[in-house]
Image (cartoon, rainbow, N blue to C red):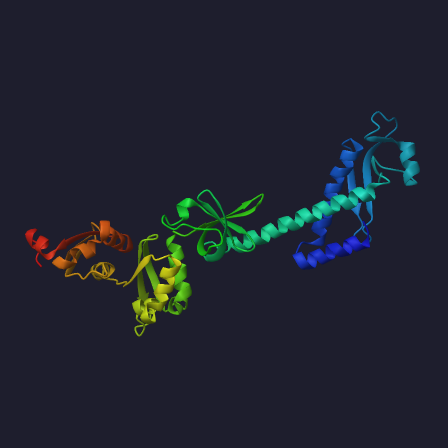
Length: 349
């Protein structure tokens, strides 16, 4: 190695952010292993790289004795004094740099630097994506491994597992999709990024991207209930009395919400107004159905809802979906009856 190599390490420090001293120390450690392999012994050796010139020297520490028993670890006192030019202590460091060690040093140094750069790049990618847990990333489906999709995020790949995919959504290679980062793990092969298309957070982030009032904090998302690929309900509240939270999310002629529906491949989204009064909130959450009356037993966490006869099937929804999502959104069990059913039960209309 030489001055040019030291200069190259300085350049790596500037461009990659890997400290030159850390690289040199790693190279020294690797050279010790390389020397021991070539020497075929496990001597007490050290390697020093001159920080200015790049010159490499190997030093062997030997015990000073009057009579040598183990030549690998000991040196006779008179010989040690001769080499050191004077009296010596119990141990001496003798230079044992092999003649062809420069070639080994250069090869080893290259391997270490490449490895450290790779590790540093993985570290940077891990930090970048671990900070994006709970956020949206856009990627391209690079390949399919069974039902698992590998998504190219540019600097890294993410795994979209079958359990995190919408059941009717059939992804193809080359599809450009938005996903929600649910977890980032550090592994020996680099960061493992797990993403989702079904997480409620994906809908939340899409709304934040599409609706400026949410991004700015004027409109607040209070709750989300989602059955991925089919239907979702989002409860919103405005901190500004002059801003309609539902209208802000839907947008002019439905443009804002339609953009999100399109990204979620046709998933229907009901935007409803949140309310501090549980009865009002449940009534709003049953949208698009119209309700006549809501009584909430807060202790039992049950809402008894009365709807017009012709609204019963709409309120319950196909296979009970509307009632189920309302319960999930509001946190109370929903018992829906028509006006005639309510009268039959003795409940006043």
